[in-house]
Amino acid sequence: MNLENYYYYFQSAISPKLCDEIIKYGLEQKKQLALTGLVKDKDNPTSEEIKELSLLRKSDVVWMDDTWIYREIQPYIQEANKAAGWNFDWDFTEECQFTIYKENQFYDWHNDSTAVPYDSPEDLNHHGKIRKLSVTISLSDESDYEGGEFEFDFRNQDKHDNEHLKLEDRFRSVPQIKPKGSVVVFPSFVWHRVKPITSGTRYSLVLWNIGKPFR
Picture 1: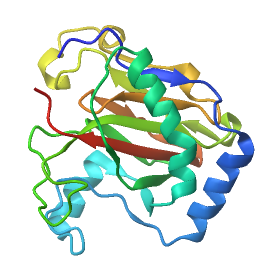
Picture 2 (picture 1 turned 45 degrees about the vertical axis):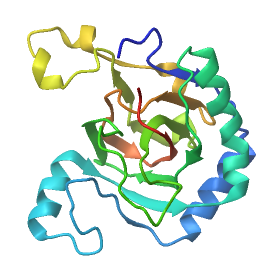
Picture 3 (picture 1 turned 90 degrees about the vertical axis):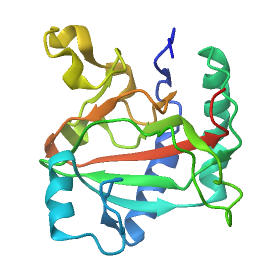
């Protein structure tokens, strides 16, 4: 899919007070190791899966499903979807992921979507749908950590397909999305990463918005 805009951002849109409230709330909850689709049984990952996972992702997460958070964030998703010209049909926001990145932790190149819809007949909010719009929110002050740059692959292809290209032509960080409270919305099929934290701790909030597959 050709895109005119790979992302849409609202710099420092969420108040510092609300960011701090989300961080405080997240740290009060039970955290767990961040997983990916590499793990078949998320309750009992194998040692081999954990080893493979560590090459792609290192962080801790807390899952949140609280109305007060959705109420604050969803208006930005709706505005970005229209203003960026995507106009994707979506009708449900999945659980929020509060993510904790400490020194040497990261999330390498990945996208958030799959062409295969959820197969969960008992859950009508998910069944037959795919992720369409992803959202990441910077909760930390820029001075609280170093590294951890959020980058997009604007060519939207597997990075191994374009090794002959200069890095600056393929991957770019977006400085405007680092300030505390900044909201970034982007199509879930766009490749992105969080580079390793070199010092401090980076907190973020991630949401995925789903709907029927593209036609």
